[in-house]
Image (cartoon, rainbow, N blue to C red; front, side, top):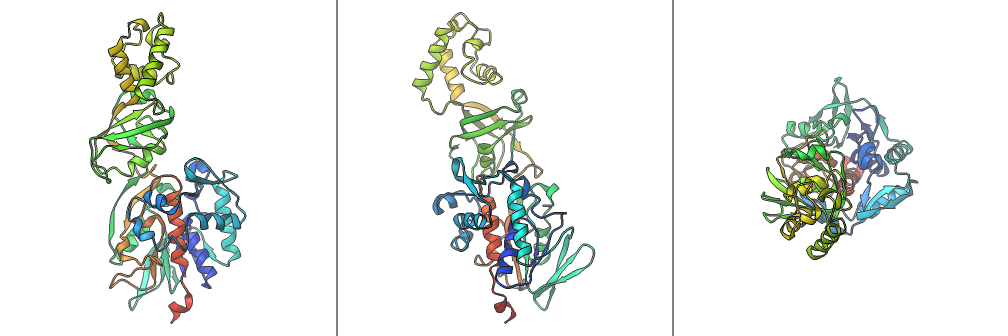
Length: 415
């Protein structure tokens, strides 16, 4: 078996195939394995998520049913057991996110690479595959960009999507799929920052907001046309718009731009509680300017923006902020609005939306079942048209599909 791509899906496919008795060759175009894995979870590697099956599948945005056959064989619990069995202790954080205790993605990659060597997998680095070689309706090997052919009875393509192209994800596997007559659904960046033309966004660049709720209005969501509301979480402002976990998850649902985003800066307080807080701050600091009187309410760089959206002058005396102005301020705090006109590109996208159409694949082993396509070919990982929200779900999908792609009895293929 030849596995093309040394990311999480490719390494898992190679490991499982070696366990099943295959002689496995793993081809990686980069100078090391798992290059993209090193930067997942900001270098900490959000390996998986502890969510139960049903809530886990609710986080899968495209083609979740395709993974139902894979779940009993490799899932979040089995993945955690697998990694800890290899000597990587794990920990759970907020939202069910699972990380290595060391908080080093390199520990995951090095452990997988060590196990590949233990299992006898032959690894070829700096080897970029250009084409799949076929004969008489079956795969016979792969050819690299230097013209060398590697013979194989079975080939797993796990080359990733387009996200973070600097790590080698440039859509090679999708080109190979098209060359063999397979359909590839349109691809776009997903789990990516959103851009805004609001001039005040630049002033807030670098500011992180914790324990906020974001809502989306006035555009079509995949889940319908109703306004979308996030859970309480974290976001941040960038020089061109907004990012952070809440925003990334929202970006995966967007079908069209522009739309309006509103931020509830005080989700833990209802209107009555918030009004009482405003009234107290204004009365206790009645001789100060509004900006100074309300300084304990928000970060220093954000407060002027909220006051402006509420139509309150920074220098207005606190004792002149009447009930109507206080109501406008409360509305701004519960719904700071900004227009969203687009998103970032693949250079910063966590995953690719779109890929090899999974209707052409057998969900049990990821092999191609399309009539007329060559036998002995499978796809795994981000190259597939399956993606999810943030939180460890996408990485789990990569390991799940990689495991199934390698979980083939070589005796059946020989027969």
